[in-house]
Length: 153
Image (tube, rainbow, N blue to C red; front, side):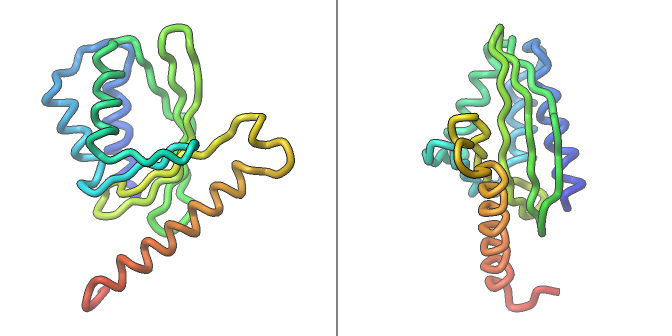
């Protein structure tokens, strides 16, 4: 299942190539292929975004036409749990975003952003422990998902 998700992610990222040469309908189609209808994104500051809010944010980045996204790493770290790190270049600003994503039905259903800033890593290894915490949350989510069906075969 992670293979189909990786293909959808790479196809989605291809839209952010620094030009605005994709139609809004094609972008919406790629977004729909990547994100589940119940998708939620938890930012590193604790703010939770719904699927619609994420779409508006991503569509505005695409409309700028000068946002470029590259995939830095894509690692499977658990049962339908993926650690993704993206590089964003927006004009002169460069930054990275790392998120642990739970997938279901070949789509992202939850993503938790990992704070990798030096300020948050002063005393403990926050990125590593945050990734592990997100991985545990993924296991709990999957356990609940398995329990919703009469048979899991």
